[in-house]
Length: 275
Image 1 (spheres, rainbow, N blue to C red):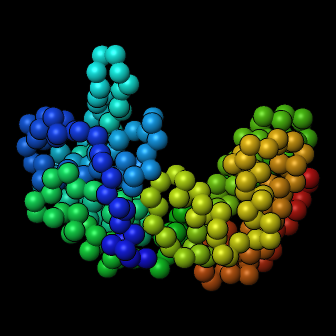
Image 2: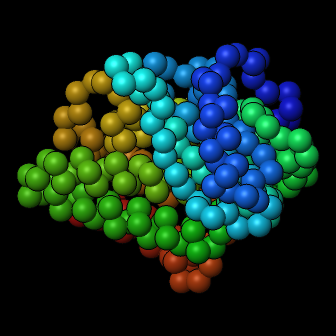
Image 3: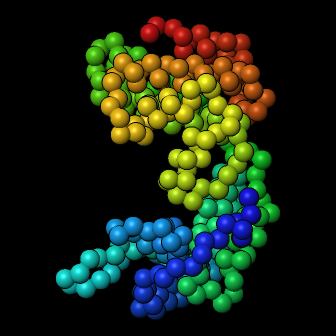
């Protein structure tokens, strides 16, 4: 993906010049100010927050601030202000786990004041550090074991008739199933929650019925969620994910006993146990 090719068409931004002037006094090491997120992309709604990034030379005085802008009688604009050093942002862009978020930031960010073109620096780092894989061995272990734990919670809740516990456990199970499929699919930028949701639902490498089961387990639909249907979806998702991981074990950075249990079928037998 070329971040430059996906830059949005500029549209008017809220007037934050007084706020930027205030922040210059509060952050003497500030070198650049940029808006990102929905206001930068041009698809902000009437109640959308405005995300403002302050890039500093050295550690900022205060990492996170908030302001509410607007008149006494009119609507208020919530501004979320994050001050980060250039060094930290570069390190995040160079990190496999941080790259998707920095790529999403660079794709939408619009400079308010950036005389040294620090956004350009970050975009070049993003372009040159696209990772082949973003999942670590520790992350894969955590996600697989968590999937098994939440599956057990689903089974216990189903047996006891505790529907709310079942729905909550199915949501977490879906989150860990999606995370386990990340290393099997192409790495992509993450620009926001909607983009992230669309990206994980569109995974090319996924179990049969993956999209429908994730939507049901995660509650990403306005349709009713009968507990029996959610439980069945959770079981299918857990089984399908395990079978897929067994067939693509070399692509998953999993080590130790849990990797052996996955390969020899023990994990699958556990999933298919008491229902």
